[in-house]
Image 1 (cartoon, one colour):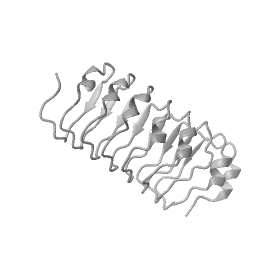
Image 2: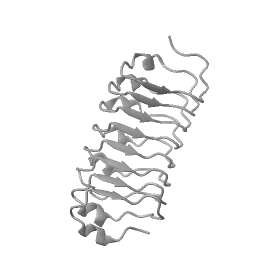
Image 3: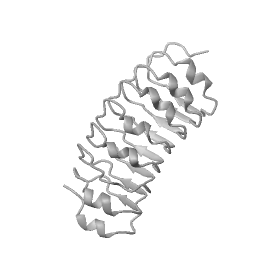
Image 4: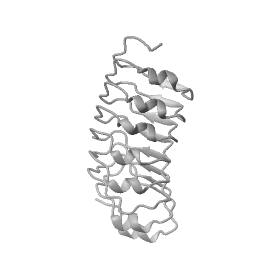
Length: 189
């Protein structure tokens, strides 16, 4: 099930929301035609794979939460204007490396997947202000987390984390930290 290809005629379309349907395919024809698209929301559908074609570089928000994705397309790395990425509630076992190349990201939601670790290079996301990795199977956090100098909101709740690293303690911009429902026995000095 897919959106009709006739949507490609909507050349002035800036926002496309198709949440809560039974979609399992996103036409490359549509992706290649909507050159002004800034926001795309395909959450709560039935996607197993997402073929983004050549989604426009003007895309600033991509929400594909609560589908059945176990990977992301490599073309995602071309979306260098992307500010918000919500891929929560899918079946990702690892954080795709394409995510780390999205240098404009300010909000990243990876919650409710099957993640057991975060990429060591997560510190490369210098513009990131909000990171939600709650409800995964993380047992630790990468040491490069402290390199997220713009981060104000970190949600690591509902994981298997036993120790908060000292690097969390040096995150001067952090305004909200949710580390609830983990296995933490003591907080760092």
